[in-house]
Length: 393
Image (cartoon, rainbow, N blue to C red; front, side, top):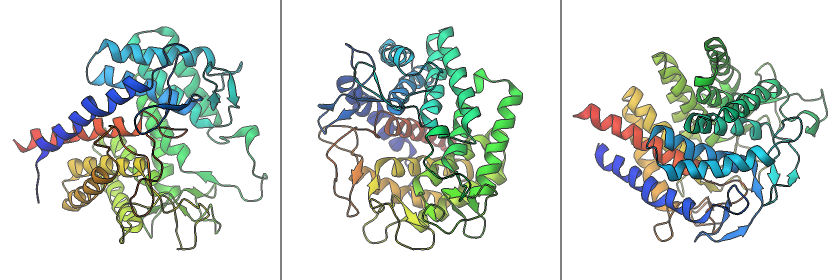
């Protein structure tokens, strides 16, 4: 096996600092109205000016996090400030609920139906408060986090389209995001709250959503954790399952919980074996646990974030366990992701490929893809390989 951790660290560092971040710094900033443009074509030209709360908050988080953890560049703080001020002014309704989408000027377009708008607001303003020292940003972060805690058992509230009581289900997305969000909020939370929420989210993810026989992470289960034989109940979302597992590893690492770390690594490996496209390479977007046709017509597409989260999980899993199978899978995933998604001509990464690995949408950002998964994964992998490099000396 090849272990050139220094070269890998340099690859990720260079891609982050000299390719991906400059792309967003050059093309996404709306200095006139505030916030960011995320609908960018391959070359960075803006093709739509609507602003989506998930992506606005995620970009605030990205530049605030890098300012806090990597280097105190004034430009990064200025970029984060441009988004934070816009969101604080326009992002919420009168009750503090975060909208889903705004016009360029900040007028509401889509109601606050989605709990993840609140989640990413809490993440963003926690990091921005730490970077800026602004008390008002701390208040925004705490308010958003408390909204998440209140909404987690009924995420869509009055906007829920399902008929009550017939087929109750809960989604993996809520506890997995809450686990990561709570770690992000650590510096703002009472220790008891922190530990209780982390323990409960880990328990729920690793008990209710994990099928102990198959070792796969289900996307939706009944409230008691049992499986439901329906489209939603059989749904496997490989990217979500793998991303959730590195969140769990990150939490378990704090207490040197090697049992949970290895269990999470096992799940990652099971998902990879289940979801890898043996004919064309890459991971499927959605799958049916029993092999039935998925309801999502885009099920066989290859998406950027799924592969990036896999790179993070495999690098972290290898660093924490030293298991050779993690490294074997990392190399396989690395070769696919870097050769298919990274755009050497115009920078950043493509988001959407067809099953054969050809570019499906010639864009770098849109309604769902912004300045988040690519820079976060590049930073985290860079960090993992720096640690591995130092351990090999």
